[in-house]
Image 1 (cartoon, rainbow, N blue to C red):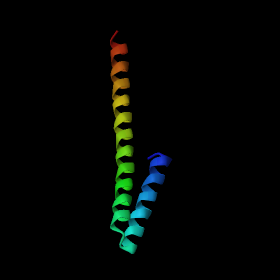
Image 2 (cartoon, rainbow, N blue to C red):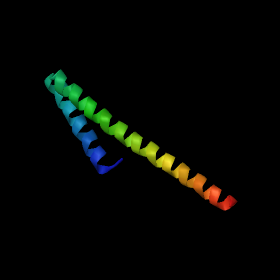
Image 3 (cartoon, rainbow, N blue to C red):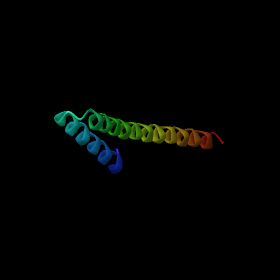
Length: 66
């Protein structure tokens, strides 16, 4: 997880926690949404990296076959 996503996840968790403690459902939901968004961004980055790695692997196999 990048630093930016980690910071966003922590900020979301803090907002969610403060919302729970204070009974502020709106703040709690915002925090949960921010936390989830950060996790989804991280997952998307991991998938992108995996796809790029697979493409590079296929390119190497094709080069070896020539």
